[in-house]
Length: 367
Image 1 (tube, one colour):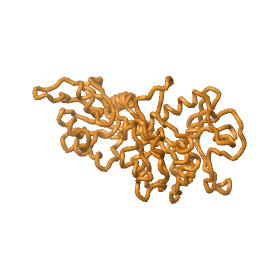
Image 2 (cartoon, one colour; image 1 turned 30 degrees about the vertical axis):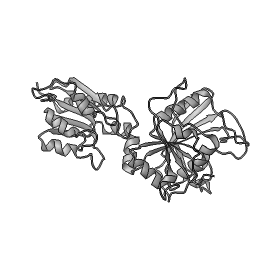
Image 3 (cartoon, one colour; image 1 turned 90 degrees about the vertical axis):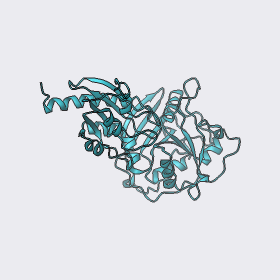
């Protein structure tokens, strides 16, 4: 019995939702998008599935193909199958070969995907597949896939990482007491969540003032103090040299000092662009307030992760400094995306209510 257009659409949507579930099992770090793939037979049944396990590992399509029987010449046998993928199969050779060619060589009859690949080098897989005689269906559950890949897509479109700005403060907005002490404003549950957010980032951005004052480790650690499998690379913004015995110099992921980027030590736009060329798509900013304020004022803060402790300190040690705002009408309005209680603290996640309009980047002047 033939399949109607409505039935086929329903099949593709179910398969795409499964592919999105698979994609979520892949790492959010490493520069590559999370992608999932399922292979359907003529009856619409899933016969194999896969996802991208990280940079340098097989892509989702190849992972799924690897679970099929092979032909006499050792190739995966996907003759007559439909590949349903969350992102257009890539069309370039990087650490792995092009997925469009892998699908063609395996003999798939049809490829269904949600979103086009936005990469200038990696895009074009759909055209290659069509040229090879494969039917291509685009845009299935595109909105859901767009939401799922929002941070990565934004980073690729802007040629700079997605920037999450974090701070911890009292309810009156103070990040430290008048003597400079700040450990610990928030409780253990909040501090552990910060480690989890570090582990979900490619890099951590701090200023030299913070490093010289606190000598932080900036590692991502578990409940027992153990290092998590993924460690974000610390990036120190400023011109002063970090001491030879600083804890950061022993960070397991290495260290980037912007003072070594000629002419870019405080140029935030240039720093973010340089990180993008290194494959860094997610940056977590941990301060200090001067660096945080400069990023916010320049329109580079894509997301806010704010931890509020039920305490009052008063004084002038504010979590956020001058943004150049002089009247209430200029206030940077935010849209809350999540509010969660962690122990006695509140964790607030927010994004700009309107897309930021980056002004000329303000230099980060760490003391």
